Length: 105
Image (cartoon, rainbow, N blue to C red; front, side, top):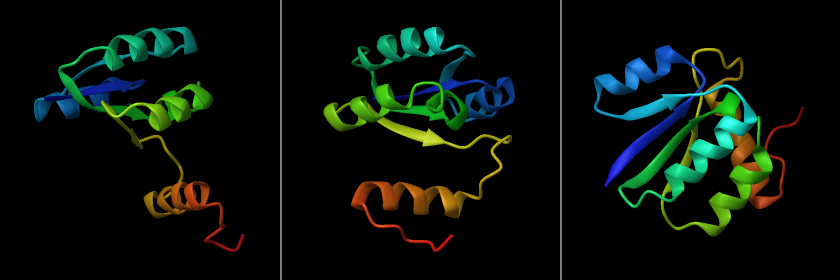
């Protein structure tokens, strides 16, 4: 079982390759959908990493796949260009999952 990365950033891909994770650099929604389809249909991949910027290009598709697929597990990862703090992202995920806002903004 392998990891695979979908990213919009060559630096993120290079960093992941240092630890043995292969992936592709893509930038357009159509490319994301194409590569996502290939990745979820590859039985070698157990975990699919996808950068926040790419998730933002097709959030409805990613959400649906996360809910219906048992494998691969789709994990959104921030890259170096994300302005949100990681803790805020986690709060957002939990709030969305349970339907209760955790932070008071």
